Amino acid sequence: MSIVFAVLLTLSIMAPSLNPEKWPIAILFSLFFQYFFIINFILAIYWLVRQRLYIILPLFPLVMGYNIFARSFNIIIKDEVETNRPKINLLTYNTRLFDLYNWSHNLETRAKMFNYIKDTKSDIICLQEFYTDDNPKSKFSNIDTLKQITGLKYETHHYTTTLHKTEHWGIVTYSRFPIINSGVFDFDGPNNNSCIFSDFIIRGDTFRVYNLHLESIRFAKNDYTFIDNIEKENPENFNWRYAGTIAKKLMTASVARGKQAERIHQHILKCPYPILVCGDFNDTPASYTYSVISPYLKDAFHSGKIGFGATYNGPFPAFRIDQVLYSPYLKNLSYTIDKIPYSDHFPVRAVFQLP
Figure 1 (cartoon, rainbow, N blue to C red):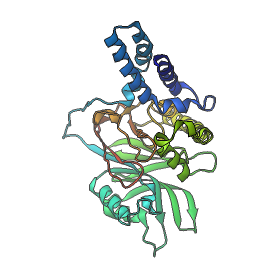
Figure 2 (tube, helix red, strand yellow):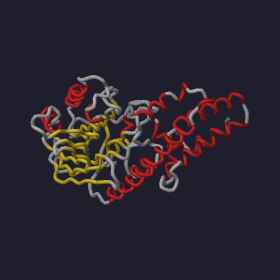
Figure 3 (tube, helix red, strand yellow):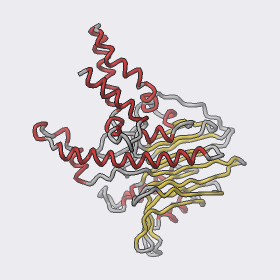
Figure 4 (spheres, helix red, strand yellow):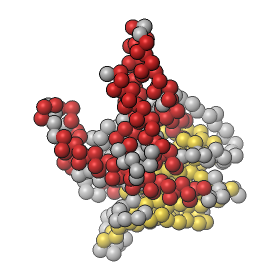
């Protein structure tokens, strides 16, 4: 058993450096890095108590994987707040279309989400899986309603899908600060994923915010049901063929995210300003996607609470797939994941301070 889990952890450690276009299977190991790490840690303690040399088996990959574990798991580290300097309150949230199709079976969900967003008193709000309807008679003119209730009069958006000329699906960034420039990444292929960037000026400082929603896995209802029931399944009757279908979807999405991440990284390298990168990565800190985007950036997660900080709120195992990264030029004061059940993602808030 120690050999098996040592090998699995080693493979998951290698995964972030493997381009999924060449090694799509790497995603299957990176997804479960934290579980493999914990199991090996338990095995190391077991062999230590038994005073056996077998401790080398789990200990070696534990040492190798420490850096990835450190960016996946947080021990409370908070900077001291300096109240005499300007701050930026950021909110990033995959809203799942504001429960447009009533997945939650609660007609009040949209109103609760709006009240939550209003109460955060954020200076910059980045929303993914955004929906709005331009029809004056529609009750879902979300883009204007959010402007009114938040008091954020500046916004930039990109719609990946439009139906009946008035209904729009996409991504949006709201701001208390003037937006002096903006742009869009329209990723290759027919998808609903994109990235927008916005440049702001605060007290003479210019900085850029990337709001992104990377390739989704596109699980169907039957896929989620299968995943949810894995623990209940009799091993003798396990549907390996369907499990293969799930694995194929994971790998296909991983390949697309890898390409998207590379494009964003190249754009970041050319940016002359300090930056914030936030949104739904659909990938964990142990992934190729995160590794490609994060060089030279810090992770706001490390100013939050102890733990792995899961942001996904669905039947799939809990992972942190919504990220907030920032230039070292900025100072991160706090990071919070609000465990509210209105979407299949939890919203993430972070506070930054300008130097």
